[in-house]
Image (cartoon, rainbow, N blue to C red; front, side):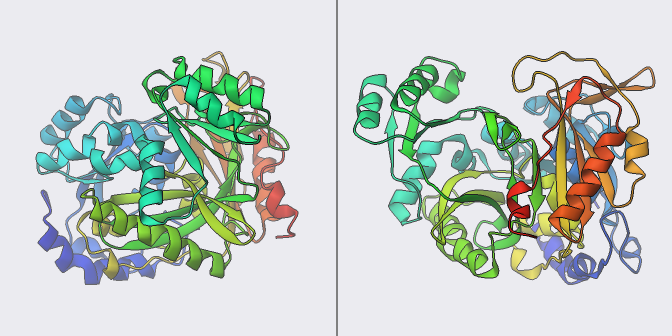
Length: 465
């Protein structure tokens, strides 16, 4: 079925919902029945090359609604479950041309940059359905200043802040407020544009660094905000422009070193669910942050459709928004997908066509935990091309799945091509059990040039969960 219409999708929802709720196994097992007898498979393209995209391909590829799965450009692991296409995620013309030539029905955009660049806009204008926000709505991640102003205008709880494009008033603002204080580059900075300054001098240096060009265009403006002392969690929801379907919570470890020490990275590990997000806290986040944001974006003429990822700080039992991301998190996606009992793909379709209220999702009670194996030197300079052995042996351990990020296969060998390279993911009845299984798998992998944190999940384990 090519060029699927909103009307056609709406007519499919009753059956799709059965597919979405019938699974009682991890993604990879098909639901009961044979939906292919009634629905022709769709050609689907996932855009991106990281662990997040591997997890999405792993999950979506199991859907009976998907016929041919492509990934552009993919990685060494994705190539085992999807057809890799040698087109970069920011090559919008190339992606559009491929979708036309191969009659792609649906595109799922993984990274933030192509969203901000308008990939979904171009696809939609060409009559190709896509999951993700348009460029105007992607500003919710593309500009921290935009999001902070949105919060101020619509009463969404967040930290007190100021916006600056020049160093002198920014430094005056810092001098008038006590450290610790947080300095953020306004735009996309690959997860490295935030400085939690413990002293006034560190904050001043962060201002000079950001406005001085370290983050290129991302630092033409900065946001300076109060330091919130609490517990951070990640909260995810699918949004169809008018309503939101909550997914699951997670917590990640951004710092490179054990004990959450050292410079921030794109993420060194994560686990789901986040113990701090109790049912009561879940409801607070939905009613005070997610739902008001969906309404606010619609009121601003920027209706939001796609995945809304809220970084939340919980202070004295109350949630405050730290920032939004306009896509699945990485490595949080790698712990959400193994916990999902349902078929994710129909829910993505429903979000795109504005019928999300007709879809349900079911989740495992198990904990999922992922440990990122990175190349020595990351997040600084690192060498590429080292060989990684025994990954298949590690995957044979019970309840272990390994998602690839920076890998390629060369002459039959798996080699590292990035900073964050593998996501070793395990399920367990508790954080401690999932952690033990993940590190057992880590220790099977033979990669002298790699390293990982050895305390992923420590905060949850102090709670005894």
